[in-house]
Image 1: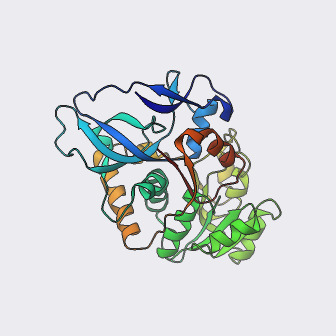
Image 2: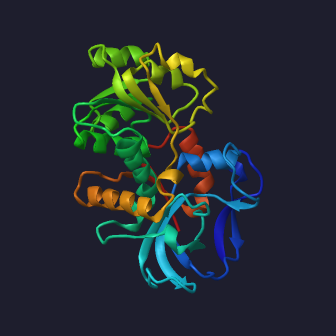
Length: 324
């Protein structure tokens, strides 16, 4: 018998329960994984509240983790018992032990710790598809990054700076502004006190940004559009303030023939080739020192409810891990 964090109903953080459960044995193509560290992401909140579906209830939440392979089902040939592995975007991570499809796992290099992997798989692969696929950032580009002091935001700032972009970050406090600037952000905007489009125009000499990476959603969607240069790309990849309301695409024409995309990591790792390509580039960037994985909060897995409360209250910065 092992333990996991489950929900029996949608709601606030109080619905997260630390419970004993039976895991079972791996079927063909699966492995039994003893997890050492799990990541915390805002998509977990969306699933806990019911904004995103969480499957049949009761359900184990959590979308990324790292651990050690303990047993394998038939037909698994690319892994061995004892391998250190990690994964993103596979619900059920809030558990000491789980069964998971082997083709969802990537083997970890020695240079990446379990905690680092749990803190960066989902966020790092998100940063990868945002910067290389949703809009391919070029040297000299101005870009706008929301939640620049958050887990994805810090990676976006670091990686984009390495690519030669000028990074403008939106943050909620002077302390978060300082953290963002220490991680590659050239300019910061205090979104609670300053008008985002006006500040962007001022910082870019009236030009605007090539891309706005917006994880906030409803509250900032129009500000993002109004911050873009002609032919700019609005990348809406999160809903921290709620889902974006329906809009008339005709408004994109007078604002500069703009583009809007709503990507998801699931699509960008949907095939083994896509997953391995992103993971290889991410691991290489971390190993080379281009990306620093900042784990600024650690909780016991049994304290996941409190971790959710702190995340929603915007008390966290960087990445948060839940330790078994």
